[in-house]
Length: 146
Image (tube, rainbow, N blue to C red; front, side, top):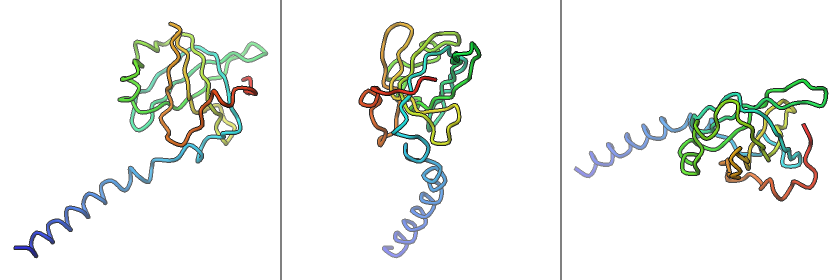
């Protein structure tokens, strides 16, 4: 009986590890994609909010100095965590104005990591979810204007 229990436990453990390996492999640390030495502050208009696991995404049109717009993608935390903080599609509707404090992507493209989001109703919400991300407030002395 003990041998059979050991075999069943071994098979179940193997199945669990096999099933969760792709998820663990797909997840990344803040430092894998974002540059803690390049803080950003973006003011823009919401074009889309994707509340998906493991990271949600907010897309903004950000006006440039020449009058054109760039669409930025900002990584947020998990939907469950955001909902607990009051972040829903209703609180960030398309067309609303927001300010993001965070960090630029290492590859220099128009995406980044959002640490804090200032909503149009005046609330400042911690929207990042990475455990190893620096606090944007500590680095806002020299944000890169975008």
